[in-house]
Amino acid sequence: MSFATLQVPVAPIRFVPIQPESGARAPTALKTHCSSCHLRELCLPCGLEPEDVTHLDHLGFGRRRVKSGSTLYHEGSSFKFIFAVRSGTFKSSLALSDGREQVSGFHVAGELMGLDGVAHGTHASSSIALEDSEICAIPYTQLTEMSEGSSSLQRSVSRLMSREIVREHTLMLLLGSMNADERLAAFLLNLSQRLKSLGYSASEFHLRMSRAEIGSYLGMTLETVSRTFSSFQQRHLMEVDKRHICITDMDGLKRTFETRMR
Image (spheres, rainbow, N blue to C red):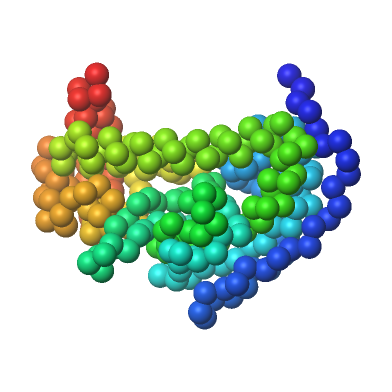
């Protein structure tokens, strides 16, 4: 099936630098383009016609390294870019009125962040690196202008936004209908699938987020998260060594919540 392509040539767009957070480094021009990126089948170019991928190569992406614990963007800051994770792990979080942090998501390589700013022009959450990471900064205005002439690019952008909506609905399901065992099992299985899509082991991985951050995301106390990990280990579903996880009974872990989903 052939899709409509751009009707007029797209001139190279000047890259508008991100205003870096305090102490952060500004992005540098990309040396690796979308057409040759190892994450192209997971990120924005996925499903695009070759012509559209070539246009993306000239869009003016920037690359930035983000140190562990550093903030990529703050809640309430001006929205100009969406960010593709090239490597590392990020968390999205919101500040509650009582000063506590509410974790709203975790992002690994090949996933997009910052789409929460589309609606109102400001970011609704903050994004913090959980390890030394690297991102691509995609200028949103130029991306939408380019997509007006490309049905395949429009579909790609819509698909990525839809993926974020699905994640929000998944979180609502976790918080609204599942017990502690089901919530943690669903979280670990979801993370396992995402890492597998990147070529990593689905059964053995290192958690970049703390138990407190997992608890905030799943609506569980730190004590409940720790107790549930211990329970999974006692039931021989997995081996746990601090943040290192080895799932020894994948089917058993799935059964922990699948009966509720039927």
